[in-house]
Image (cartoon, rainbow, N blue to C red; front, top):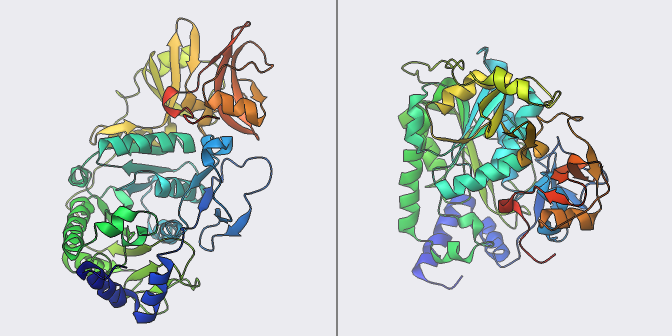
Length: 464
């Protein structure tokens, strides 16, 4: 560090949070290059071996890579086979799985598990939560991924579509809007905006913009965000709170404030309540992951249980009107299009498929909160022709035999993703291209040429 007053204050805050010796190790690590890691999609396992690297101890599907490859030129990445995520950030998913198990054992709700990812963009934690929920609850869950900034919310919607889980819906609303769903969510994950101390190795601006005043501003904002969404958490529900910063003001002191002011009980408040992973610092209320002590960047995570009562619960709405076009649309679609029961909504220009098991819950949220996406975009009808959506090819909701698949080599896959003309040998009509067994998207073979249906917004823009 350069020795400015802000640097000295940061050093003081860091020593308060992790101790003098750990702070010395962290300062040394700030000058080192950041690590690279990915988290595999357990429901899209590509044929072949996992990436070379060390496993992330707290994430079953996390891999620390030896070098940083060019992810843009890997079709498996575009197929949703993995997500590029910092290994420390994956610890939030570990705490979530602990909370989910606890909540599912304690709750007798009789409804799908309802989870709100409150500050979700760009989607790393959302995709981790989705995979964990599907492994624990099967189809019986709803994950609402929210991002208040509309541009970031669009990126979130794109990333969740590529991941392919139809039980994720994306909203774009201020946290206070969720008060309209009192007691609705079993778990809320709040990865709140912070001063970004844990990102100093990845983002030079984070270090340059750090100040004690900004820490105080972030602390105030974080409390408002949690308080605004608190009413939507069920009694006995769990809030998972995380930041990518180190200081006590945005971390442990905020957990204490939540417990003192919002009627909550900390889960990790006893010495030895941690998980014993090497390098992770156990704080008064949670856990700190610090560069130099762990391979990844900075992360704090804690969890509390809501003990106070709520004024009234919002019951799922009636999906009758939302899915009134279901029968008409169903009669126009090819048979065996979906892998599980769905309800159809929309019109002939934009047909959406919603897993039947959560259709009422999806409608409850959609009629209350500004929603960008839900279920799976199935496609559109043009005359008698059904044009499948690019999202359908990537969705877990798509049936395995709904259309012919054609396996292609790396060069053809990249040309498809670049939206170049391609001519694979395949039957006429709509064909789904696959790479290493994973679906990439559709072409339409019309005989003398093939139309490339890869979305313009997702095309590879670099020279391949």
